[in-house]
Length: 427
Image 1 (tube, one colour):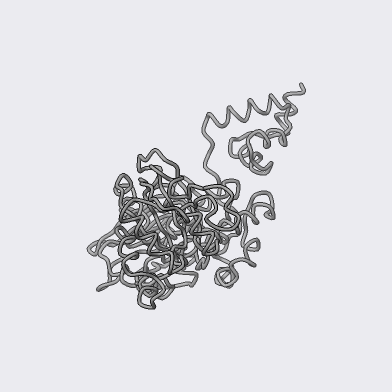
Image 2 (cartoon, helix red, strand yellow):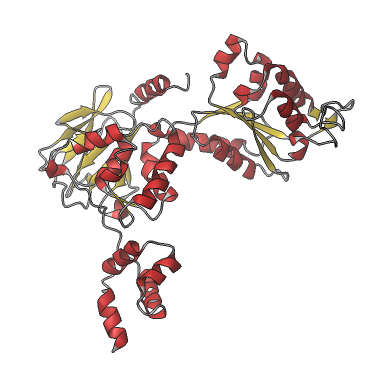
């Protein structure tokens, strides 16, 4: 199946017919419930609400006691509203009943759920971990920005190999420079070669060479790469002798190499050698159950309103994690007091914002969720810092690496009043 939006849609359609449906809580006013997941099979009906006895109860005042249910209907799973006050929304639209697919986003009150059928990311990570200690070449496939180099580095770290991780983007160099970079060159091999260079294969000896964008490797260099993989020896440009190497090769591309082979732009024998193991990284739009957790890792100081979080889940992320990181970095600078609201992302995810904006106002909330009640340790930490910095919240925020608004929120949820503490300090 090709790495295209059409291919992804086909894979989602197939996955929706699996026998187990998982419902994930990904955003909620009750931070303790984020990450809760419930699996249900075809013989089970799951009720969700504020007081869903025997089902999934959520601590959200805008959720009805019995809000919606999920049940298997013939070969599919469906979500149905059960007379809630504020309505149930599936993929941005108010629904009495809707068929669910992999990645469906369900909103009840200020709580967001994601539906999944299987976890492709977990499967890829498990395979990578088990295969990391081997010497097998691996081919990492996936759209631009899906994290292929991150996975390659993880494989190297878990491989037990003593040598370094050496990356090379095959699309970034000319044919002549690429050959010299890969295989090295003898002194005087070409104009400007004033000294011999070992090349990246030898630089990565006992380690891992990561060849990114392998689909852009010039056709006339492919036989030389194949020979290194098969013989475990490299011949520098302009040299007479081969040099043995123990280098594990990981390659990545967003190109469909099977089509490239059919078109004659990529050698079938090299493809077969590189594809000893193939790991296909799913695009971000197929990883919605982990999207908001990933966002919190990329921008831990940002607090997402429910509307903004829903818009991020409804966006299709054509540039994947790279696009998400860019949005969050800009938003962290421009957002008001560390709170990311719907208006802050309207230029970056426009169609998703409109799907949320055009909703009846009774279901809307553009305020960030309440933070978890701070631990006793955090409360004592705040009191100690308040004494140390004589009530200067700016200095406390600097020491904690958080915005001032975050510190004020922590003080508030800890039941501490900054003005009262300063008064108490002065008397």
